[in-house]
Length: 128
Ligand code: FES
Image 1: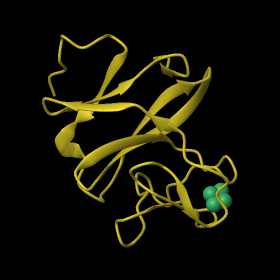
Image 2: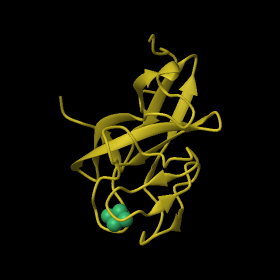
Image 3: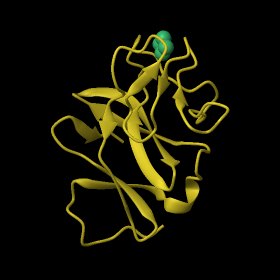
């Protein structure tokens, strides 16, 4: 993975594009959301990549039922392991179960074989 050097420094290199397969395992990462340490994940669905906080809109629990497994058995929806809320992979909108709104979306960019997430007012790199 060779990060681009001409991107605005707000873009944080995450992983190689090839590490995300359509409807497959996610790439999990840590960040600060509004000053608090949170887990987040990136997935690929229908060729496009998306990233969200790993926090359900029903109760603030992590969604994955096994590490990095967020898709349901069909590979079409993101599912919360706790009570089964379903979310659209492209928007994070809740479309079933007890979720109370969308997942928190993190701006993500795919460029030259590398994924980047965008830091800003709400999202900051985790302390190392
Ligand atoms: S915590 Fe996710 S559905 Fe209840």
